[in-house]
Length: 367
Image 1 (cartoon, rainbow, N blue to C red):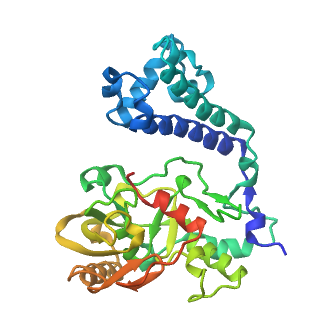
Image 2: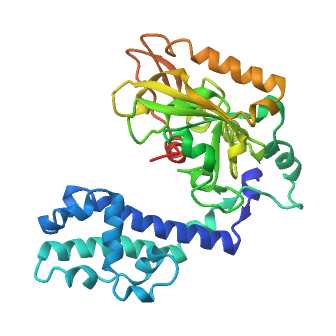
Image 3: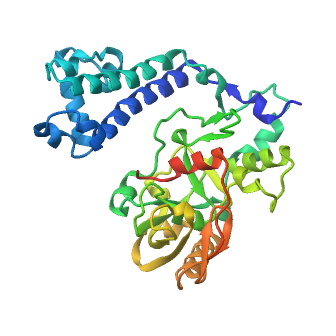
């Protein structure tokens, strides 16, 4: 039986090309990240290891491999993918068998990026929009594409980057295609978070981020969301089609507990305030194992250009939230907050489905 997801529109050529180029650039970034690991950089002489002290230095090393750099037009990472040859490395380390091995490993990753131009994946994914002839246009207009008002405009986003920067830049997607991408594959069934800015309506969701590093201190940004897409509605619709209700095993694999919405951008003037979050991670490494957190209300910044313009019920909603989680640790001692809710000390969080696992990737602002 046809449903709303079947009627999401295919990618236009511009969006397709933008995504492909973004993925090719990401390939070069991934190669650089690999080069910071001993198993890769140890294939080169010890004297060169300083070139791989971090990702940025590894990227510079890769760029310096390119011969005749005056011929590079546009993004050098796209040029790298299109033109890389093993000799870029082997010529620098003649007779070094380990360097030759590294050169082939880089080529394997580059070849995978070159195949993106014909990858069927870009024919499968869809834009989260429907045309005017769709029988689901009324549902889409009523529930998916949203213009929020009042307290429904208030959202929260977790990020460990300092407010000094974020309040100047705002939040933008990693790759902008104007309309978020829907991934219909069974192992995805969710929005591609690189193509949008995700916000939690429930502040508790922000305390998990960043997921990629077990930092003790991060930030909860209160933001106004004006126009975007109700991904929480789409997640609930998926659960309904799978005959899952709240409380059923597998429900939280499809529906994020903390109410996800997404927008194209959060401008600096729509950042209301930032409050530092202190958190404890259950296993000391992975926030998804469970967290406890508290808001450090004496350490934060308020946007005094935006705050006076808020409606009274918006200010009260924000103040009540800050008060609730700024008065000690949440949840109580012996309990942990997980993506499935609160669990006791001896309980283990349930396995999350692939779509939820992937969802966390771009909710974090800094990786």
